[in-house]
Length: 418
Image 1 (cartoon, rainbow, N blue to C red):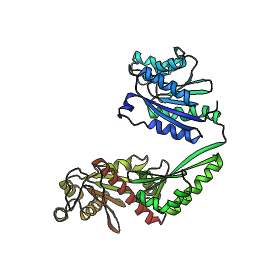
Image 2 (spheres, rainbow, N blue to C red):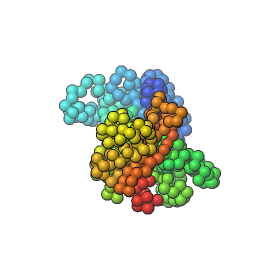
Image 3 (tube, rainbow, N blue to C red):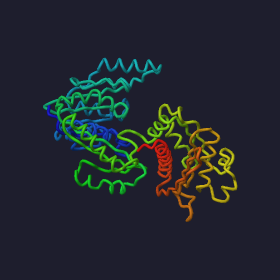
Image 4 (cartoon, rainbow, N blue to C red):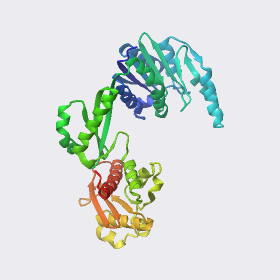
């Protein structure tokens, strides 16, 4: 089989209605692109047997590889198995090994297995069954006349290992192991998309399609694509990364899947420093992100959500006169919060966020989105003003992002690293 192009099919009424985001489609597109298979179509279809059947048939007519996800569950609205039997022209049979795995999985959890779950052990006769160690429904592969149909369960935590560990090896046999297409994402914080573009505009123009920009909440991603042999692709991406770092300097905080909170945690660990956080408008989001990193107990001591003025005064010892004179959303109060939490926690760094998340509460002098971030250490305090212009949830996310970025920049100054 010459696997040169593909179609991705997302199955599920919840995808059509917008209740769920199709993260599987994005993952599969990137994975297929990475081995040189061009995704020519992406289709979404609801939980209807006849529509699924027609979509899969149409996909097999126009693509060498079809990868479908979803609809393999045990409930009445899971219709992919029936549609797959129609497409392959093969009856559904009980797969003994899969049934045994499902029964053992329920037994380990000491939960009685509903009879409806047995349905997930049905497979079209002659299909290749891919064991699913992360769930109950297996993956299925059917091949005929140079076309390959792959059907996987819907949950992303099941799709990714199934595809990476079992489907990719099958596809690589068809594509050959010579040519590769790989991407690398250089992540930037502290610069707007237009500022990033200004610094690398000649690179964007010189290699159309090789370098692209994508704005995210509080970040800009510069995505680089390279093709060629496995060894050559790696060296190409390394060269591009060096060029971009030269242009963007310490605004670059990470690569590919690295998150800002992970980078901050690594710097704190390397420098042997500890941090405490005081939050108002972000409501604990900064602490949530910091503690999402495994091992964060090495450097994170405590977080305080001081939402009201009373909480700021009682928990962080912010003078009431300071709040009365400058307001809770002010550089003075932000600095007092940072110093207060650092003093209480006895940490190297104190971080504070106070602002107006919205949609109400703003004035002409202090509009919605106005946010102050402060850092406190042994040398004193410093503060930063931001004016976000988004909805409440985005304002909070941007506030947490800029707080973490302020910590990162402060730690870089300490080490002199860029």
